[in-house]
Image 1 (tube, rainbow over the protein chains, first blue to last red):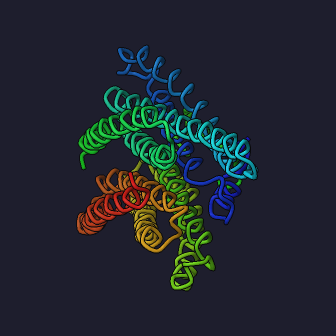
Image 2 (image 1 turned 180 degrees about the vertical axis):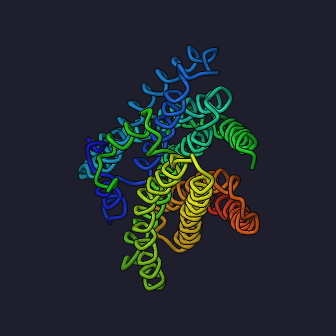
Length: 209
Length: 209
């Protein structure tokens, strides 16, 4: 699992000439950083003086953030699998008409999965953005800037994963399928941008800047 | 060094009740991810067919991105040191007037360093954004989306580190010093936002989305 790699090794692998890990893995890590910071703010608020009234809400937020973090950590490797599957399908033989048809079907199936995998990451990052908004509203003021960092990381992850949806959806022949996923991503991009700016400005106001 | 931690351990530490690593460390990791992806695009362009004319430019870009990545990796730990220094100064004794004066001086000195450390991260992220723009313009079209992910990660890192500048500058009594740093951060935030949106739209146009 990539999550067992050191940060240094992951960054060296990102920077290298190897195609994976690349932007898809980086997107998932960004989202996971956002989820971890949501948990941090929740953990430093739950049970603290003056925050008794929001402790139960933030326990629920923390449980959701932990599940999303686990999902986004899995997404780092799912991106590699999806990429390898597309590359593998393109590498299939195409000597006969039968082989060509099989290869085309394999490519199209792999492209659909390579569209759905980053779309799942987009949706997970979107949920992290919503949780960031909740901790920015209810969290301990001493660590409220971490709610701002959470939303920025999650939105960078969302917009990054969206690029992989765009790339892979472009080559899908089943346009109904492709357009459905693209419409969903574009709606989430818009909503995420609004929420992110709103949370960032809330955090700046709370820290008095 | 935090960079020797696994991604899983770093995320667990972020999510925990411990105050560090927190948003400052996450900001530095985001910037380093951006720098690594700039290098990836450069490495997958240099020497490739049809990209001979930009290979020398991208070698220079890669060298700068590697130096910035190393700087941002160091910034993960510098954030912890700066935080511990501020906390340590607040913990100094204040029984006598002399102790109070010494404590105040120590706090103010620590706050200045805790403002300059994230400001260095802001500047490094800004340079990564500029390099992202260059690889988005000149890089191999097959991996151009990674230039988009690079700029998003670097801008999230920049805006995140800026929050730590804001927080620490607020408590600095030397207002000339504080306002000077704040003006610099605000100018970089504006410029970074413009470049980031421009690069993201360039990348979307190049991938036909």
